[in-house]
Amino acid sequence: MDKERKLIIAGNWKCNKTVAEALVLVGDLKRELAPVKEVDIVCCPPFTALDAVSKAILDSNIRLGAQNMGENGLGAFTGEVAAGMLKEFSVGYVILGHSERRQFQKESDALIAKKAAAAHAANIIPIVCVGETLAEREAGITNAVVETQLKGSLTGLTSEQVERTVVAYEPVWAIGTGKTATTAQAQEVHAFLRKVIGTLHGDTVARRVRIQYGGSVKPNNARELMSQPDVDGALVGGASLEVRSFADIIKNSI
Ligand code: 13P
Image: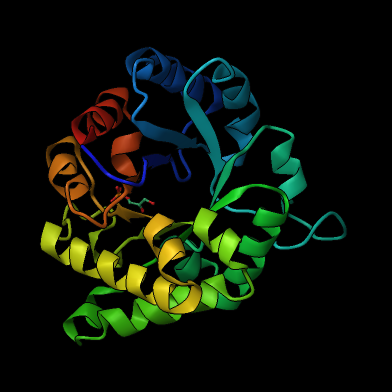
């Protein structure tokens, strides 16, 4: 597939996998995906498996991501993990503002923006998630919702930082439900998000920023989704937990 932007496909393991299970999965993925050069491949295990996975993928084309981080540096922040600590394990990406964190931890756009700035300061690429609920889509306010989330979550970043940020469009109603946005629905929102970035940071940044789709991405829908002009990759939940489905999503996307 011929795109100006390199595809980036990330597995969000969420709260799954023991260290032993994580090592089996990345061992299998390394073998399956060794020849793949066309896609940036990222695995995002839970914090507890970062150390082991980091060592296991040293000599591979798989990069490491975390699923969250604290907005502050070191200090009296019980329960937090700081960007500098992630760097110890060669973490290159961090998922921020996932809808599950927006919902269960009540994360706000302002908080996500602080985390994104802290990630960039540590040379970690944030994967900033936005997406509407089913009620919001049915009310016809999808664009307004994702525009507010995107602008709020990128506040304070420089244009250079925004260009390196990965945006993930994840309609909440498509996460873990087996319902995927149609390719037309995904493309429409992706094009809109790119336009919003263009308004804020200019055409070059908008053209270069990568926007992933997330929400029930499977081997059988990956190719069609990735073929959309403004879809630059996927953020995969359930299907990233098995070698066969994650590897096939990547292979079918090329
Ligand atoms: P599913 O692929 O399980 O729908 O999850 C998507 C997601 O939330 C990825 O971050």
